[in-house]
Amino acid sequence: FAPKLLVGQRVLITAGPTFEAIDPVRGITNLSSGKMGFAIARAARAAGAEVTLVAGPVHLPTPRGVRRIDVRSAQNMLQAVDTQAPEATIFIATAAVADWRPAHAAEHKIKKDGSGDTPTLAFVENPDILAQVAQSARARAGQLYCVGFAAESENLLAHASAKRVRKGVPLLVGNIGPATFGQDDNALLLVDAQGHRELPRAPKSELGRQLVAEIARRLGEAGAP
Ligand code: C5P
Image 1 (spheres, helix red, strand yellow):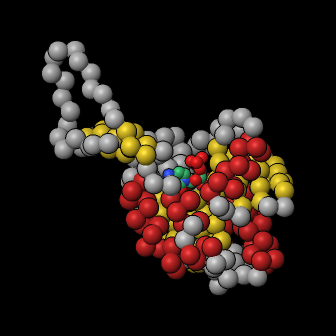
Image 2 (tube, protein in one colour):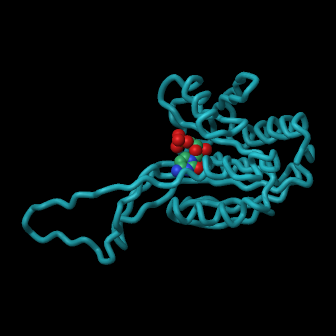
Image 3 (cartoon, rainbow, N blue to C red):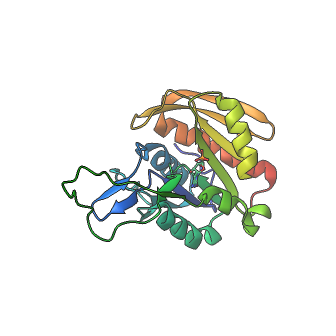
């Protein structure tokens, strides 16, 4: 039994890592599995929402009834989010977006030249997808409820509270360590303007359902868009 808490809502979710090309066969990525974002997508769909999932390179099946857009780089992810966000009423950013990308992706595979010299990579900063969406007119008008995630190795509450304010989102969800990359369970710290509460360690599927209920409750209180 899944209560239909999100009927009439259109939920946009980012999930997984991004992949930033160095050359046609190499790149930089991270260990995000996408499991938390996919679990939230499944739970939101079960709660009656229309769900669009923008996924970086992950090895996960598409949850039933969810529309999936596969992307590779942070810039691809931003482009997909920009086209979908105007339709959404809830945006949940779970993706582990690369903070930096190589400044120039080589057109051809970088070859060893036998001299022993090693290549040097220069980086540029990637766009902050969540911060951009949270600053959009619809988000600021309360028509798009934005939720961010944070993975921190220390001082989770302090970092998550600061990040919530910096990104301009009403709800920031911290992954309670140790890092749960690829694992099937997690524990979450929810931080909003009222304070914080913990969702104790549980399977990501269960945490997805609990988070959906928490978001639905906050939307109800705010007067749903
Ligand atoms: O700043 P930090 O990367 O820790 O913020 C994490 C939150 O911001 C997550 O919700 C993540 O999906 C989002 N984010 C983003 N675009 C970035 C970096 C982070 O959407 N370039």
